[in-house]
Image (cartoon, rainbow, N blue to C red; front, side, top):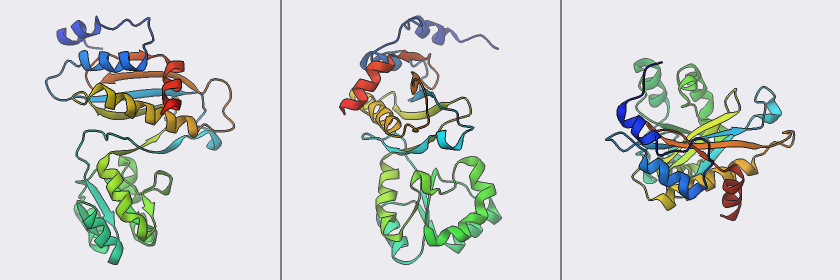
Length: 239
């Protein structure tokens, strides 16, 4: 493993690795310790007390962050008729049906971040599974991106505002971005609290022992900051 850069080492000295910080302090530290010149993302790693190998302990879903992620989200929609028009009015970047499926299959076109499909289109969109699936771009009802025609507009609007989806990894950890370092600390705090509140509501009934085992936040290039999990849960429940 290569040595950390000078800027990283200087920033890392501001973090007490033996301490678990309250949410407000943790967020402020992340903002202070971001070493890069670009506007870094604020990332969260939540370790859950679940075993993802058991289907009844798979934690997967979506969360609408109140202040978005600070990123421009390109949304593509597979729809026809009124649903297609609703998608365009809601701000979808690309809307199509057979033509869009063909473009992705023949050209390998993937210039989008999120994909939404009406239920009637999934028979055709399903052919793109090998292309979109590995990249996390496949529309999925579990994260709210396979919808009824009258839900397309609202779904697109939520995604453009910063709705995120998540899935627990094999090690029981969920990694997501909750914003940008340039965002106000209070907005980042509320985004984190909203994410944790969503995870708490999704606790599998079969999960035993401590559910939220650890929470850590960091900027894209900065050091990790451990969060006081009990304080974080209380904060999340208060929102």
